[in-house]
Image 1 (cartoon, one colour):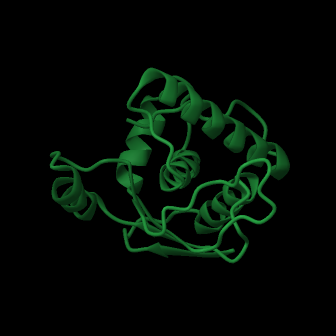
Image 2 (spheres, rainbow, N blue to C red):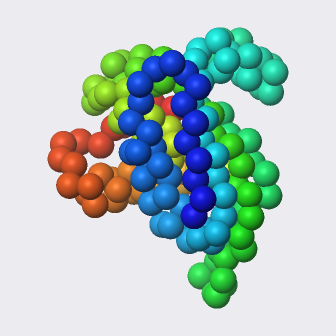
Length: 165
């Protein structure tokens, strides 16, 4: 799996954890090991520009996903998942820090960025949360992936609750 993490935000973030949880999420979703993903960490101004340009919404947001090859997780009967370019995930640590501090289960900016990374991966794979049933499916899968990764890392305590808008 080729995953690039580029921190252009000026904020110190745990890039290794972002890389590790992205790799874990993609493996768990059975994405081809030769697929490629880019994660870019930007400041609030850059995120706001992207949010306005692509979503026509004001202000910075927490995470945006830009799919490339529209890869999907393989079905249970598929022997080999397709490989390709997954796309880009853009994260904003300033928004992540605020969301983590305001969450029901308060958590760090880095924990929120990990959650947002998984959220972005799922969006790249075609998951959405516009409809209640979609939200239930996506957020359930997101929690299972984050919990699995945290357990594998030996991390204790409650997992971050979904704060993604």
